[in-house]
Amino acid sequence: MFSKSGEKIDMVATRYDYFPASFRWRGRRLEVMAVEKCWTTQRRQMLRQFRVRTEAGVFVLSCEPAKDVWRVRRWPLTYWLPWLKKGSAPRYPLPRRQRRPALGGLAMQPATARVKRS
Image (cartoon, rainbow, N blue to C red; front, side, top):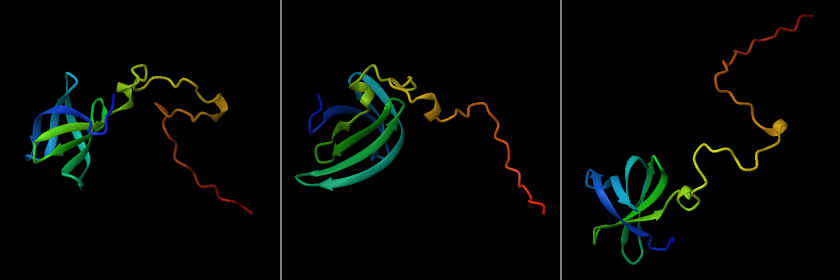
């Protein structure tokens, strides 16, 4: 289960010796597609934290530079609820009249100005 300190991970590669590039967590190697945010906190010890986007979802990673230890603090909900998959239909969809129309494949027509004749 999730603890306050997070789970240790193996950092496979970093960019510029600072930003995470790929890491191994629970036997899976995950490549970082983008670093969305990074910040530093200092309470008992200095922590560098990164919110990263991978193919599996968004993770929050932290690094203790003094010990060179990497941890994962938060991970996507799909790891806790395996039945929840990306792109799956909602369990309780909205009624038809409240749904938004799908725009896939439809060409948008430009709006025409109407002139009022008197």
